[in-house]
Length: 96
Image 1 (tube, rainbow, N blue to C red):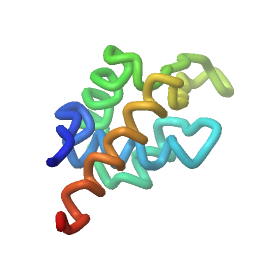
Image 2: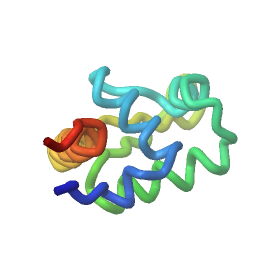
Image 3: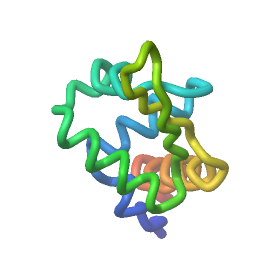
């Protein structure tokens, strides 16, 4: 039996964002932009969706008078990501 894949994480860009954030304490917008190769607009929309779901935390601040958006994975996001990976593995494992 296959486990259900979380539709929120099944998006390529949202999964990429979560994959980056799971391995770092936090990441600023430009770092995520560089790592994912997304456009600014698309990255912003996907970050908002993950934030609205409670999967990530978004911190707005300023650095040298310039706006700075920093993201970090939330406990709910860690749990969702781990469940997603487990579900994905269920599709890759041969059933006897």
